[in-house]
Image 1 (cartoon, rainbow, N blue to C red):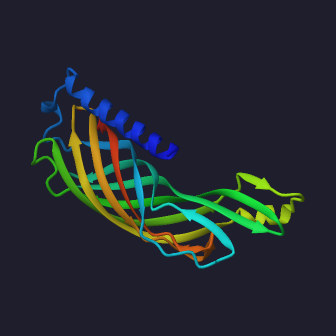
Image 2: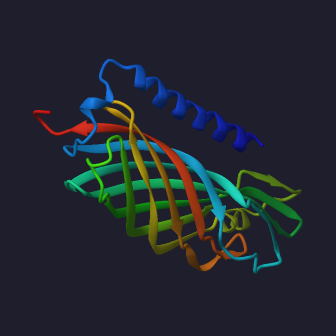
Image 3: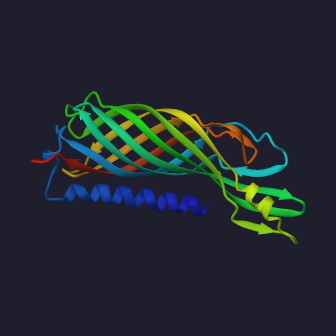
Length: 227
């Protein structure tokens, strides 16, 4: 519930900041039709589980169907309709409890990604403030199982460190969305991406951590020199 409240507050703040920019002195007329800027921003949203079931019955993992998703990104414009996007993200995947020799190792599971993607906006500068796009690319997914709390009479530190496992996978991603200019320097970014994350070995009893991210972003336009 706490994560859901954080998500709701974060999305509200993004929408509030974006909508308030409409009242700025620099109106949309300066941003509509422009194709001479790069973009940087922050996205908040959710991660919908599309992966597999727990394959290790010795691990009690409570993987969420929908987790909190955060992403920072930078879009470098190569052509009027083509960007190269660099992004870092983290998705909360739930909690895990590992029991070994009477001890309970309790922690959280997160999936991190580092991605490079080609972002194609075929109608850039032609639909006013709206710019729909598709993107595809790839990068590295890093799954991490943390131990936040330990209970038991005797703690074996070898088990403690073993319980903090991690996995790495090379992935490709595919997605799409729309950029919306709200003022000369501020915009909103709506996007959904599919992340096929399948680790070679188990992480909290699961190998397939694939998911669909849906997020809303606040974007700042970085204009080229002289504009």
